[in-house]
Image 1: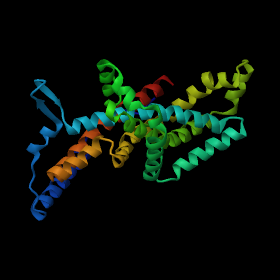
Image 2 (image 1 turned 90 degrees about the horizontal axis):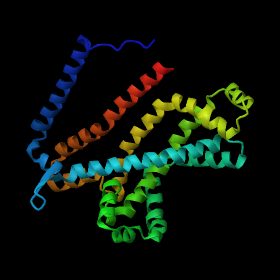
Image 3 (image 1 turned 120 degrees about the horizontal axis):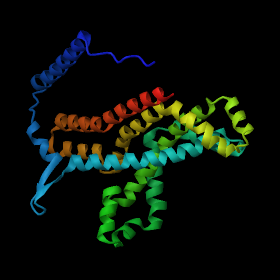
Image 4 (image 1 turned 90 degrees about the vertical axis):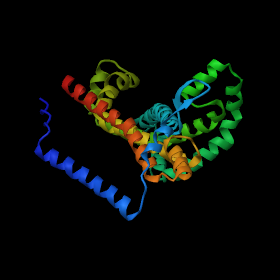
Length: 293
């Protein structure tokens, strides 16, 4: 049976009070010793603004950056899972060539600084490969309905090439960690499971699909979900290549308004708004799967 969840007690209340006291002390030191003038009233206008032409409230810089971060993280996660699964299968397959390629890919991606990978892949993809498809021109030539769909799901047509470059770059970097997690899950399944599947007449592919992978994914769900949540935070690194996600928008606002602390605290709160519900959902899913087990 699963242990009962511990209720909120006096020690928890003391810890909360200590954290609040520490936050108040930091705010006091910033205000008094740095002579910082707080201006939280200016922050809401960077979240939403009233559009006179449309006659309604629309997203402003920070919310636009949040939506770009959400789209970038979502599609990068899907592509990273696909690439990571392919590399994990290559590392655990029978082909020596496949194992060498998979291991070389994982070790290369894991042992290079993320910023170096971002620059290498971005400038290679943006300057050499993606322009060959003329995606910006193609996206601009479709109907307004398709342009709206592209803007909602990916990026505006004029920014599509840069967005796809960042998406692929982030997915390639994260897929190495996903591959290592999935590889460890596959190798944790004992040999008797493979032998039992072979005794039933299943091929290796059928054994993977119907016997091994379902058990492996269940075992590695917590670290895999943690890596997907980490991808949301790692997406901030693409701000260095001028992708207008949340960190980039925060940098631009800080430079133009000088509201350094207010802007970055708001950015941090928006990142928590993305990642904390994901952590709660994964925790609930993990408990549900443990109960079913």
